[in-house]
Length: 620
Image 1 (cartoon, rainbow, N blue to C red):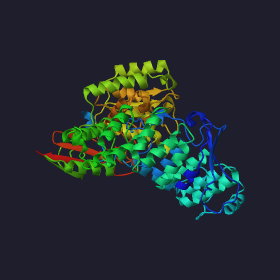
Image 2: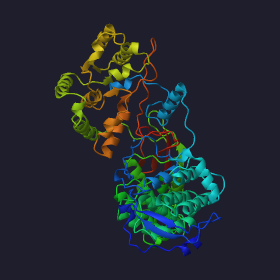
Image 3: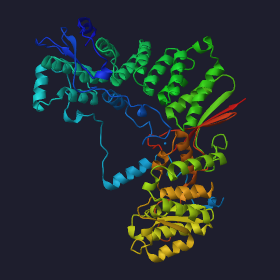
Image 4: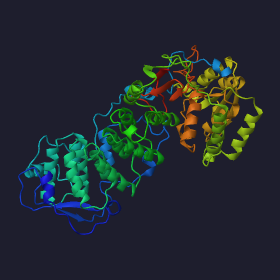
């Protein structure tokens, strides 16, 4: 589909309803005469018909998944993604006394340390001899293997017949071409074959061809597809719009992407990627006014910018003098960029290493006071190893603690589904139990701790060892368990359970009840000094909280109060717990410094925190 094809295209004059609402299909109707070339016949004319399947190749807008974030959502860190897969899917579819606790001295060994979950998963896979799947696949791509050169129509027919003449051969083959990064001429020869054989090219096939063009950087080809589709449809679906924005933003025609964005906003909320592509283009072309206007719009819509967008803004300084000319002084521009760092702080977002490098370079390029950036880490006591500054404490302030306590009580302990986990009578009985007991120093999830060892015949022995360690440190301990633990068995020896009840306060719930709401209630009710012992990361309970700020507050409290047994509990070996960091891993600043925790690994899960820092200091 070169530019010569566009000159031959005749647009159907039949009035069309917007594709986004009607789900129509677009077709090329061709002269049936044979064509030996891999180029589409110049006699093609573009027609439009209605299809019974809604929104082919596109997707309805899902605003709940449009980029809003609290900084903790998802399973893996955003750095773990294949950009081409993201592009393809977007087109096809549209996170006191207790200080004496014995903690493992090796630092930083913590369940919240970046990469812990990945290393644990890999270890389990090795033990189970489960191999990692190789390569990337798209739907349908595994069924066919693309040729290594453009084929004539007869050759495509032979290949299709050899595969059993599948109905969606063209779609599956285009998937395979994308997956294998095939040459664009092969895709063109496929389009020629389909057009000659059926007389039509479906919208879905064109959209997948467009995806291949965008991913391989064939922007001039994208312009041709754009002219064809714009001439036939009043509006585009999410996948096509995003692809056109991405491609146009890479070229001298980037301002047309702004127009596409305005049209998109009439129908659905654009994605952070849509905004980011144009912001990057505006910065690269010296239009910082447009860049910051779109950035402000993105934030106002409650979307979270992609890190590439921030990277472009930090790198764009110095590319133009427009900021000064249009009234934005250097100090105002600095304030805008430092505002990005404060946004990261407020949303507990960690820059990737590449972005952290851009931040470092920007600070060091500032005129006036000289800034110096260094890569570093923190001591176990929360002191920057580079400048010696003390980092913010992980402990909550009295105000933060009360705010969190109130929200947990309202949304988790007394939430809508609380009585799916317990009964009103049992909950009231537990509250009365806690009220008449002294404040606890440690609350133990008995069943969770007992399952630390694989040997299920030693559950009571494991729990007794942990309780004995805590009691030996002079701590007031509460053990939460279930009533079946009091029934003598190989796993729950009567003697061990009797000793546990002598060393700690105990409360045993019904066997169908969940322990976590009781654990959270007792821990928060006892005060800010109280910690809890469990391997449960509480992600389901954190999700019950009403907003991102409260969820981040819960995560901060959790990291400063959760004890996890280190390794296995063995006879004659002292029980040890993983380290609890004394400082908060969050972007922080003072009068003459910034400390920015950053991702130096792609293995961090959202409930883990980075271990490396960027230290930025200045001398006035």
